[in-house]
Length: 183
Image (cartoon, rainbow, N blue to C red; front, side, top):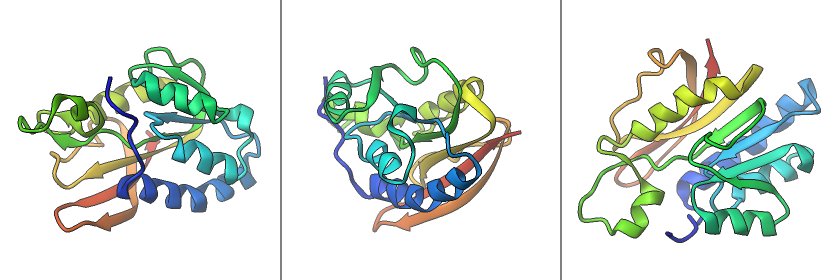
């Protein structure tokens, strides 16, 4: 299995955005339920906790068993799951910093799990959006990162109303963090 995905520009973009968004959402609902798909190093689980979400309401999943073990050692409720395969319940916030790059045949196989979102780069995101609908509370929000290097996701086709809420430009790509609401 590949190594745990270490925080990078995308992780920090998500974390900084959550630090602003979670307190606003907690004022409306102090009992928020938070789920991170692909929790990796646990940076966003820690952000959720430090932003005021009750630890017992913070859940994570990862396809990488080492990431699951690491986040459990941090004290979080985390399961080994491919997207939502083993997830149960409904959530007020679901975050996903997916593998979003198009397939690069020169990339080593052991790092593709963390970086490659499919041939076009958006296939995992599209599958995530399909599955996520069944795990959202009534007024839930999804926070999702995409890359300009991937084929654009058609959010309307996925039945979500979206708006970009944050972005960062790197020398070779633009990362955008989207807020998604189920229509």
